[in-house]
Image (cartoon, rainbow over all chains, first blue to last red; front, side, top):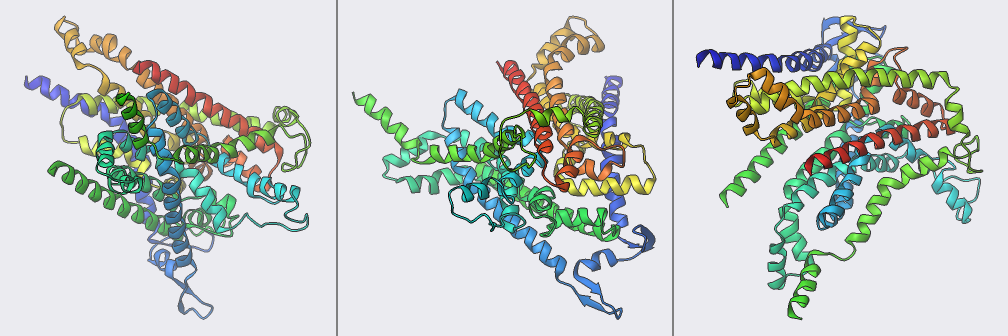
Length: 302
Length: 270
């Protein structure tokens, strides 16, 4: 018995060893090295000078001016604020667009439901870069929207609507990128909903708005929260939408970090920004876990 | 008569006016941009945005573009190396986590699997870049394969875990009762029953690897360019109809694999 028990432990460890090694070395390892680099000094050649320094983090808020004085620099704070606002707006818009769609899909027959949900998931499995690039064809100079404006004579051929390289263009790109991630969890929680509740409420003279507000919305809350997190987190660190549709002019956190490693070559600052983003995401996930636990406790009490 | 009335009333309760139309708009929003992209890939004009006529000219041109071909080959090499590696690791992990009962490293191990999904992609990308650069590991495509294996693991894991959980453990116990030893039980019962799940995991990992852009962009050095990275550099130089053609092919490929996966899974569930 004892020997078998030991054997089992050994088997488990052997089975999990590849996972521990690969994720441990190539996922946790890089995060640790990045944390170390964020605490180093950058050297003038774009490399890392191995000396402890908080300059990477200080640079998020302060700048050194010509006279070697430390000055408050709001430029990066503005980028962080813009990332936050756009991620929030994208989450809200996705919820607005996705909620009725998720409800409608959840009320279809099994066969139709499966096909529709499959259609929702397809964009998730296709290339995000290409899907964002499609919006350049639509929004760009002489693109689909401008061409149709020219065609109907709503705009003279010389002028442009200047749809690209704006916050709105980035917002459209973000919503388009992550909308399926909002619909799937909401759909999952709506599918389990007891429809008799809606009948009962109607029998008790509830109108449609009350049905949504008092029954559908509270019962699909776990899905709404889950979906919002799934949209908000990748939007916060998005790179493709701000890069292609913001044209590198409107930087967000994600594109700012990438910029530090491609052109600016300031690794400690880039690493510090990445650590900051990671910390934000961890906070959001902790908040989510707490909310989930509360929901479960509440459900258990009933 | 009365029951009929009741029935129409129930429908009335569940269905909200306008939600159907809203859902149609929702799907339009998801698919019209893709549709436009594919349409424009058949445009004969040299200017990507102006429609002049139908033509296969840009698809034909892809076959004479050596850079695109090299990038495509790289993409397939990476996916055919990373997806099987991730699938093997995911299979062993799923066996230990689903069949291993309660043990000390359980929570820790499931946490490790979901870690690549939790960390924002851009953070993983720059962290891996710093890691390889500071250790001086510069093995071209192998760097890319390692990075892809890591983030493919959770995608390979999900369907394998689901398949294992759906499997009846009594089948294995029955085989053991009939004097089959552990190895042959695994070979003749567990593995064949798990194969559809493993294949599903492989397909998802493959699609995720083929489509990855941000991590590859940061990790791949010169000569290790994959197709999405190449498409990015083309887009940055300006929208050309050739990009539309190669993008349409990539979309078609991903949709094909995922559709295959879907039909495959439906068969298992039936």
